[in-house]
Length: 211
Image 1 (cartoon, helix red, strand yellow):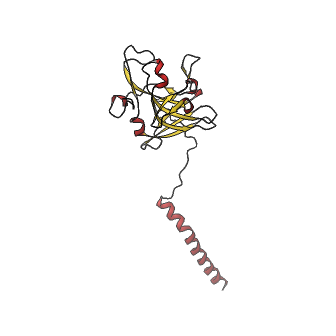
Image 2: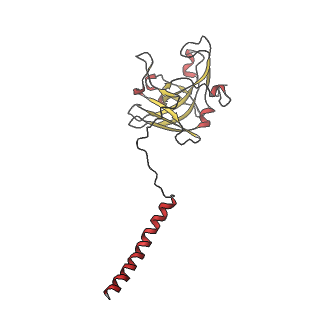
Image 3: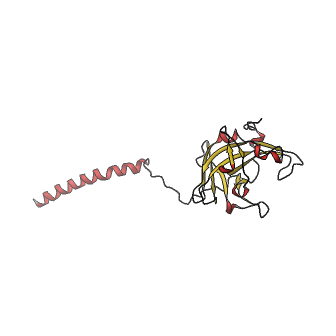
């Protein structure tokens, strides 16, 4: 009798185990239920991408100073939107504007020259900034400046766009996607490391609302 009772109990236990284990096995074999893993070591910036924007130390002769601010464009999801990420900015949360800079016709016209605003965003108390920007918004609003063979400054005999990151407080927004400078505080800006030339030599760009 004890043997019979033991066998019945064993059979019931086997049935219960079968029902409890089978769904788990089915999930594993299907391979559809997989929890995504967040890569905590993924850097904020992809330093393999160009161009980049960087702070420049005026006192040292406009030397690039990444420790005072640096930002890069990337395609984080390889989708239609660009991501602009910056680090080492001021630790005070600040509203910034990413602009396509138009060279003024003369030095005296600096405060009346219109620049295209590509995006605005606010930095964090840790000095980081993230902006998500439509690719078309960038390509269609780049201002392509043409520099003559004898042009003063860093660029000669080339056409290209300058993109800067500027505190919004130094700009007067016009409400139509353009802005003018109301102050000049270059120690707070991120400047282009080089001109964007490829898009300026193609067809997908504009020369700004003044043209």
